Amino acid sequence: MSHYYSEEPNVPLKMKTIEFCIRGYCFKFITASGVFSFGKLDRGTELLIESMVLDDSWRVLDLGCGYGAIGIVASRFVNYVVMTDVNRRAVKIARKNLKINGVRNAEVRWGSLYGPVRGEKFDT
Image 1 (cartoon, rainbow, N blue to C red):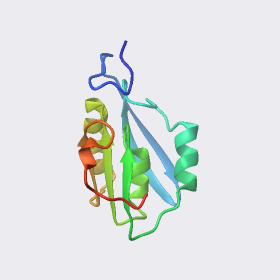
Image 2 (image 1 turned 90 degrees about the vertical axis):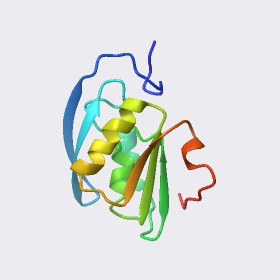
Image 3 (image 1 turned 180 degrees about the vertical axis):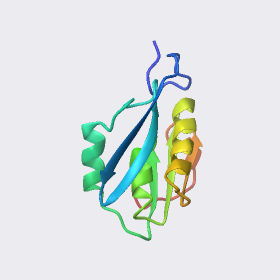
């Protein structure tokens, strides 16, 4: 059985676009089957986004970024964001969402846990 933390989800690809406003900004996201929280902003992610403590000089790591909601919102408030995920579908969708939301101070990398950022330092 495939999970959203699988490298290659084996569920058929379905996509849905969502929009929401949070922390004074409005965002548009493509979500996909086989990626965490398909078709919605789940309540846990919403609470985390609302309560994140961020500083404009910080480098932020979004580990297990899914379609990119946390990292993309954080990019509005910090210097740079590195988003990672083991799920190749999530990485592809998160990269599209960077473009859709006009984010230039973030990137998405594929890999497991801290492998994609080995040797780098982050503020949060």
